Length: 362
Image (cartoon, rainbow, N blue to C red; front, side, top):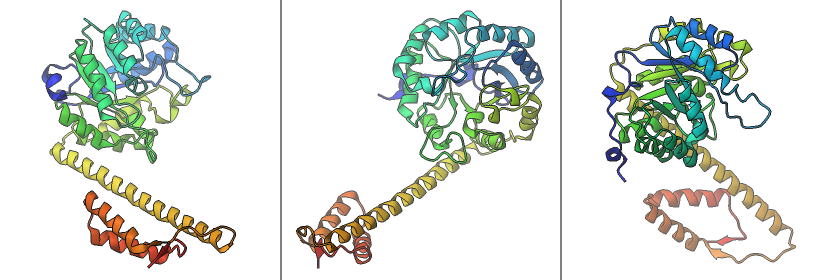
């Protein structure tokens, strides 16, 4: 199926797309009290470019016993924020009941979280609950870098009649996320935009960074890649936050961050190509590490084999001709499109340095 032809999005008519400057969405990781919500919102109200206040009402947790959000009462606080500040409001929804409650309380923008995007059953339930509803929806990337899963969530919502769609890039869980909380994998968004060029894209800088010191470089990178907006967590007093205190900013700190960003990006296409090159370089480094690990494992097995054979307690395995082994390897190299001379050099060196005299003979 050609996704680009099944989803017709018009960026110019989207309320999620930027106009002259990126859209800024900010607010606390979790709604904790009406006082916390109002203090934070009043501080954010004055920030240039900030037009949406978000807060976590229901919080997914890996293990039970942790703060899981205040629930429906937090939607009343969001309504108060909207009345007092005029800011649009947004929150994450994880299933159909959340959708119903959020809409009943006048939430302006719904966000589907990363842990929901991975579950096509939940996404379909949300899509069914939104049949006939005209509301903007932002879809966060799935926890793991699965582009088709992300696109599939967008398709389900689009088929339900939701036309005002956007995505939130919040980073991915990988083998090595350092120095980030969630690895950005910028090239993944570049690939998404090739399939859906009109989709508005937001960067959840807080969840990628995981700490305040990385918020600026992550946000600037997103702007360089021509993202439509930023999502940053803010709290009037992060030290008191019940979740993700280390990645939240006070409103005045967020104001300073936004003022230091460069919004005049001349060559977003060059930045996108740079992001792809950086990811390719990192992937090659990862493969190099795997090669070293394989050589080390082979060395350990060779030593273990020789130790067993030196003990003279077991019958020696059948000895094979090295030329036959190498010949098979070269056939595999040819079918894999790898230079045969290169492969021959590598394995001859491996045999010389990590020889198993009991297995091969010249």
